[in-house]
Image (cartoon, rainbow, N blue to C red; front, side):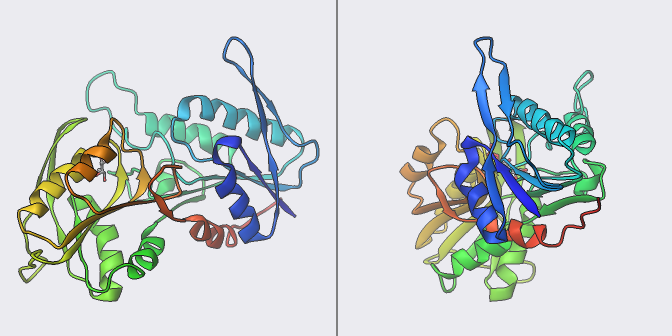
Length: 301
Ligand code: R5P
Protein backbone atom coordinates (compact mmCIF):
# COMPACT_ATOMS: atom_id res chain seq x y z
CA UNK A 1 0.00 0.00 0.00
CA UNK A 2 1.19 3.51 -0.86
CA UNK A 3 0.13 6.93 0.36
CA UNK A 4 0.78 10.34 -1.14
CA UNK A 5 1.63 13.12 1.28
CA UNK A 6 1.10 16.66 0.04
CA UNK A 7 1.31 20.23 1.27
CA UNK A 8 -1.17 23.06 1.00
CA UNK A 9 0.96 24.99 -1.55
CA UNK A 10 0.75 22.18 -4.13
CA UNK A 11 -2.44 20.47 -3.08
CA UNK A 12 -4.46 19.96 -6.25
CA UNK A 13 -1.69 18.42 -8.40
CA UNK A 14 -0.67 16.13 -5.51
CA UNK A 15 -4.29 15.02 -5.12
CA UNK A 16 -4.54 14.46 -8.88
CA UNK A 17 -1.43 12.32 -8.70
CA UNK A 18 -3.01 10.20 -5.96
CA UNK A 19 -6.13 9.86 -8.08
CA UNK A 20 -4.20 8.82 -11.16
CA UNK A 21 -2.35 6.17 -9.14
CA UNK A 22 -5.52 5.15 -7.25
CA UNK A 23 -3.77 5.60 -3.90
CA UNK A 24 -4.77 7.51 -0.78
CA UNK A 25 -3.80 11.14 -0.21
CA UNK A 26 -3.12 12.90 3.07
CA UNK A 27 -1.91 16.38 3.83
CA UNK A 28 1.08 17.32 5.97
CA UNK A 29 0.02 20.09 8.35
CA UNK A 30 2.36 23.04 8.82
CA UNK A 31 2.23 25.57 11.63
CA UNK A 32 4.43 28.67 11.74
CA UNK A 33 5.84 29.61 15.13
CA UNK A 34 6.38 33.33 15.81
CA UNK A 35 10.12 33.05 15.14
CA UNK A 36 9.49 31.60 11.67
CA UNK A 37 10.12 27.95 12.52
CA UNK A 38 7.66 25.39 11.16
CA UNK A 39 5.94 22.69 13.18
CA UNK A 40 5.36 19.73 10.85
CA UNK A 41 2.57 17.24 11.61
CA UNK A 42 2.24 14.00 9.67
CA UNK A 43 -0.64 11.52 9.67
CA UNK A 44 -0.17 9.15 12.60
CA UNK A 45 -0.31 5.98 10.55
CA UNK A 46 1.78 5.64 7.44
CA UNK A 47 2.25 2.66 5.11
CA UNK A 48 5.68 1.22 4.26
CA UNK A 49 5.93 3.25 1.06
CA UNK A 50 5.05 6.91 0.88
CA UNK A 51 5.33 9.44 -1.91
CA UNK A 52 5.93 13.03 -0.85
CA UNK A 53 4.73 15.37 -3.57
CA UNK A 54 5.80 19.00 -3.37
CA UNK A 55 7.15 21.25 -6.05
CA UNK A 56 10.29 23.09 -4.97
CA UNK A 57 10.05 26.62 -6.31
CA UNK A 58 10.85 29.17 -3.53
CA UNK A 59 12.70 26.28 -1.95
CA UNK A 60 14.43 27.56 1.16
CA UNK A 61 11.66 27.05 3.71
CA UNK A 62 10.17 24.15 1.76
CA UNK A 63 13.43 22.20 1.87
CA UNK A 64 13.59 22.34 5.67
CA UNK A 65 9.98 21.18 5.96
CA UNK A 66 10.60 18.44 3.42
CA UNK A 67 13.59 17.03 5.28
CA UNK A 68 11.70 17.15 8.60
CA UNK A 69 8.76 15.34 6.95
CA UNK A 70 10.97 12.61 5.46
CA UNK A 71 12.89 12.09 8.72
CA UNK A 72 9.67 11.96 10.77
CA UNK A 73 8.17 9.45 8.34
CA UNK A 74 11.28 7.29 8.66
CA UNK A 75 10.94 7.50 12.47
CA UNK A 76 7.39 6.19 12.10
CA UNK A 77 8.79 3.11 10.31
CA UNK A 78 8.34 4.04 6.65
CA UNK A 79 10.73 1.95 4.54
CA UNK A 80 10.66 3.60 1.14
CA UNK A 81 10.20 7.33 0.56
CA UNK A 82 9.80 8.74 -2.90
CA UNK A 83 10.08 12.45 -3.52
CA UNK A 84 8.08 13.84 -6.42
CA UNK A 85 9.28 17.38 -7.00
CA UNK A 86 7.95 18.52 -10.39
CA UNK A 87 10.25 21.56 -10.13
CA UNK A 88 13.54 20.59 -8.52
CA UNK A 89 15.49 23.40 -6.91
CA UNK A 90 19.23 24.07 -6.67
CA UNK A 91 20.20 22.19 -9.83
CA UNK A 92 21.67 25.11 -11.81
CA UNK A 93 24.78 25.79 -9.69
CA UNK A 94 26.71 22.68 -10.69
CA UNK A 95 30.20 24.24 -10.61
CA UNK A 96 31.83 27.16 -8.84
CA UNK A 97 31.89 29.85 -11.52
CA UNK A 98 33.88 32.14 -9.20
CA UNK A 99 36.15 31.35 -6.26
CA UNK A 100 34.18 30.82 -3.07
CA UNK A 101 30.86 29.93 -4.73
CA UNK A 102 29.21 26.86 -3.22
CA UNK A 103 28.34 24.05 -5.63
CA UNK A 104 24.78 23.86 -4.36
CA UNK A 105 23.71 21.14 -6.79
CA UNK A 106 26.05 18.65 -5.08
CA UNK A 107 25.18 19.80 -1.56
CA UNK A 108 21.40 19.68 -2.03
CA UNK A 109 21.70 16.51 -4.13
CA UNK A 110 23.54 14.73 -1.30
CA UNK A 111 20.99 15.99 1.23
CA UNK A 112 18.09 14.60 -0.82
CA UNK A 113 19.95 11.33 -1.33
CA UNK A 114 20.30 10.95 2.45
CA UNK A 115 16.53 11.21 3.03
CA UNK A 116 14.85 9.80 -0.08
CA UNK A 117 15.00 6.39 -1.75
CA UNK A 118 13.73 7.69 -5.07
CA UNK A 119 13.38 11.15 -6.56
CA UNK A 120 11.37 12.06 -9.64
CA UNK A 121 11.27 15.44 -11.31
CA UNK A 122 10.51 17.10 -14.63
CA UNK A 123 13.04 18.96 -16.80
CA UNK A 124 15.52 19.90 -14.09
CA UNK A 125 18.03 22.64 -14.79
CA UNK A 126 20.96 20.32 -15.59
CA UNK A 127 23.74 21.73 -17.73
CA UNK A 128 26.95 19.80 -17.47
CA UNK A 129 25.59 16.42 -16.38
CA UNK A 130 23.40 13.96 -18.25
CA UNK A 131 21.77 11.96 -15.48
CA UNK A 132 20.01 13.16 -12.38
CA UNK A 133 21.80 10.56 -10.25
CA UNK A 134 25.07 12.40 -10.91
CA UNK A 135 23.50 15.20 -8.84
CA UNK A 136 21.44 13.06 -6.45
CA UNK A 137 23.52 9.95 -5.82
CA UNK A 138 20.78 7.31 -5.58
CA UNK A 139 19.89 4.71 -8.21
CA UNK A 140 16.31 5.80 -8.56
CA UNK A 141 16.77 9.46 -9.43
CA UNK A 142 14.76 10.17 -12.53
CA UNK A 143 14.39 13.28 -14.67
CA UNK A 144 11.34 13.14 -16.90
CA UNK A 145 10.44 15.55 -19.70
CA UNK A 146 7.32 17.59 -20.31
CA UNK A 147 7.70 17.16 -24.08
CA UNK A 148 5.06 14.39 -24.35
CA UNK A 149 2.46 16.53 -22.58
CA UNK A 150 3.51 19.59 -24.61
CA UNK A 151 3.24 17.72 -27.88
CA UNK A 152 -0.25 16.45 -27.07
CA UNK A 153 -1.35 19.94 -26.03
CA UNK A 154 0.11 21.73 -29.06
CA UNK A 155 -1.43 19.23 -31.45
CA UNK A 156 -4.85 20.34 -30.23
CA UNK A 157 -4.09 23.96 -31.17
CA UNK A 158 -2.00 23.89 -34.36
CA UNK A 159 -1.70 21.76 -37.47
CA UNK A 160 1.59 22.98 -39.02
CA UNK A 161 3.44 25.30 -36.62
CA UNK A 162 7.15 26.09 -36.67
CA UNK A 163 8.90 25.47 -33.34
CA UNK A 164 11.73 27.63 -32.07
CA UNK A 165 14.26 26.66 -29.42
CA UNK A 166 15.83 29.81 -27.99
CA UNK A 167 19.19 28.19 -27.22
CA UNK A 168 21.22 25.08 -27.99
CA UNK A 169 20.05 23.36 -24.82
CA UNK A 170 16.43 23.54 -25.92
CA UNK A 171 17.11 21.44 -29.03
CA UNK A 172 16.43 18.20 -27.14
CA UNK A 173 12.89 19.29 -26.21
CA UNK A 174 12.07 21.01 -29.49
CA UNK A 175 13.20 18.01 -31.50
CA UNK A 176 11.23 15.58 -29.33
CA UNK A 177 8.05 17.59 -29.92
CA UNK A 178 8.58 18.48 -33.59
CA UNK A 179 9.87 15.26 -35.12
CA UNK A 180 6.86 12.94 -34.56
CA UNK A 181 4.62 15.50 -36.32
CA UNK A 182 7.26 16.45 -38.89
CA UNK A 183 6.94 20.07 -37.80
CA UNK A 184 9.87 22.25 -38.86
CA UNK A 185 12.01 23.71 -36.10
CA UNK A 186 14.81 26.20 -35.66
CA UNK A 187 17.34 26.39 -32.83
CA UNK A 188 18.67 29.83 -31.96
CA UNK A 189 21.93 30.61 -30.20
CA UNK A 190 22.02 32.51 -26.95
CA UNK A 191 24.67 34.44 -25.07
CA UNK A 192 24.00 35.31 -21.43
CA UNK A 193 25.72 38.35 -19.93
CA UNK A 194 23.87 38.43 -16.60
CA UNK A 195 20.65 37.28 -14.90
CA UNK A 196 18.56 39.70 -16.97
CA UNK A 197 20.81 40.31 -19.93
CA UNK A 198 20.77 37.83 -22.82
CA UNK A 199 21.18 38.02 -26.59
CA UNK A 200 19.40 35.52 -28.83
CA UNK A 201 20.33 35.13 -32.45
CA UNK A 202 18.08 33.31 -34.84
CA UNK A 203 19.60 31.52 -37.78
CA UNK A 204 16.52 30.70 -39.84
CA UNK A 205 17.65 27.29 -40.96
CA UNK A 206 16.85 23.89 -39.64
CA UNK A 207 19.65 21.44 -40.23
CA UNK A 208 19.59 21.44 -44.06
CA UNK A 209 17.00 23.83 -45.33
CA UNK A 210 15.86 27.39 -44.79
CA UNK A 211 12.68 27.72 -42.71
CA UNK A 212 10.46 30.69 -43.33
CA UNK A 213 8.56 32.07 -40.35
CA UNK A 214 6.60 34.46 -42.52
CA UNK A 215 2.86 33.91 -42.08
CA UNK A 216 3.43 30.86 -39.88
CA UNK A 217 2.25 30.02 -36.37
CA UNK A 218 5.51 30.10 -34.43
CA UNK A 219 5.90 28.46 -31.01
CA UNK A 220 8.87 29.07 -28.73
CA UNK A 221 9.61 26.06 -26.53
CA UNK A 222 11.74 26.24 -23.40
CA UNK A 223 12.13 24.44 -20.08
CA UNK A 224 11.82 27.49 -17.86
CA UNK A 225 10.81 31.14 -18.04
CA UNK A 226 12.48 32.98 -15.17
CA UNK A 227 13.02 36.64 -16.00
CA UNK A 228 11.50 36.00 -19.44
CA UNK A 229 14.46 37.79 -21.08
CA UNK A 230 15.37 34.76 -23.21
CA UNK A 231 11.82 34.63 -24.54
CA UNK A 232 11.67 38.41 -25.08
CA UNK A 233 14.83 38.34 -27.17
CA UNK A 234 13.57 35.36 -29.16
CA UNK A 235 10.24 37.14 -29.80
CA UNK A 236 12.09 40.23 -31.09
CA UNK A 237 14.02 38.11 -33.58
CA UNK A 238 10.98 36.15 -34.71
CA UNK A 239 8.92 39.30 -35.26
CA UNK A 240 11.38 40.46 -37.91
CA UNK A 241 10.13 37.54 -40.05
CA UNK A 242 6.45 38.62 -39.91
CA UNK A 243 4.90 35.43 -38.49
CA UNK A 244 1.13 34.86 -38.33
CA UNK A 245 1.27 34.37 -34.54
CA UNK A 246 3.80 33.78 -31.77
CA UNK A 247 3.09 31.44 -28.86
CA UNK A 248 5.24 30.39 -25.95
CA UNK A 249 5.20 27.05 -24.15
CA UNK A 250 7.42 26.25 -21.17
CA UNK A 251 7.58 23.56 -18.52
CA UNK A 252 8.26 25.76 -15.48
CA UNK A 253 6.66 29.22 -15.30
CA UNK A 254 8.11 31.95 -13.10
CA UNK A 255 7.88 35.05 -15.32
CA UNK A 256 9.19 37.34 -12.58
CA UNK A 257 9.06 41.16 -12.67
CA UNK A 258 6.11 41.67 -15.04
CA UNK A 259 7.68 39.44 -17.68
CA UNK A 260 4.24 38.16 -18.62
CA UNK A 261 2.87 41.65 -19.24
CA UNK A 262 5.95 42.59 -21.25
CA UNK A 263 5.60 39.52 -23.48
CA UNK A 264 1.88 40.12 -24.00
CA UNK A 265 2.57 43.77 -24.81
CA UNK A 266 5.07 42.62 -27.43
CA UNK A 267 2.19 40.80 -29.15
CA UNK A 268 2.65 37.20 -28.02
CA UNK A 269 -0.70 35.48 -28.58
CA UNK A 270 -0.47 32.51 -26.19
CA UNK A 271 1.70 31.86 -23.14
CA UNK A 272 1.34 28.35 -21.79
CA UNK A 273 3.03 26.38 -19.03
CA UNK A 274 2.70 23.06 -17.24
CA UNK A 275 1.43 22.70 -13.68
CA UNK A 276 4.93 21.86 -12.39
CA UNK A 277 4.85 25.32 -10.80
CA UNK A 278 1.46 26.85 -10.06
CA UNK A 279 1.05 29.94 -12.24
CA UNK A 280 -1.66 31.82 -14.14
CA UNK A 281 -0.25 30.44 -17.43
CA UNK A 282 -0.77 26.77 -16.47
CA UNK A 283 -2.49 25.11 -19.41
CA UNK A 284 -1.44 21.45 -19.45
CA UNK A 285 -0.52 18.89 -16.84
CA UNK A 286 2.58 16.79 -16.20
CA UNK A 287 0.82 14.72 -13.53
CA UNK A 288 0.13 11.76 -15.87
CA UNK A 289 3.79 11.77 -16.92
CA UNK A 290 4.78 11.50 -13.25
CA UNK A 291 2.17 8.84 -12.53
CA UNK A 292 3.43 6.62 -15.38
CA UNK A 293 6.97 6.75 -13.97
CA UNK A 294 5.83 6.15 -10.38
CA UNK A 295 4.19 2.91 -11.46
CA UNK A 296 7.65 1.65 -12.49
CA UNK A 297 9.41 2.39 -9.20
CA UNK A 298 11.14 -0.55 -7.62
CA UNK A 299 10.29 -0.62 -3.92
CA UNK A 300 12.37 -2.76 -1.63
CA UNK A 301 11.56 -3.08 2.08
C1 R5P B 1 18.55 28.24 -19.91
O1 R5P B 1 19.43 27.47 -19.70
C2 R5P B 1 17.12 27.85 -19.77
O2 R5P B 1 16.81 26.83 -20.67
C3 R5P B 1 16.21 29.04 -19.97
O3 R5P B 1 16.30 29.48 -21.32
C4 R5P B 1 16.55 30.17 -19.07
O4 R5P B 1 16.79 29.74 -17.77
C5 R5P B 1 15.45 31.21 -19.06
O5 R5P B 1 15.81 32.23 -18.19
P1 R5P B 1 15.24 33.70 -18.35
O6 R5P B 1 13.75 33.59 -18.43
O7 R5P B 1 15.70 34.41 -17.10
O8 R5P B 1 15.85 34.29 -19.58
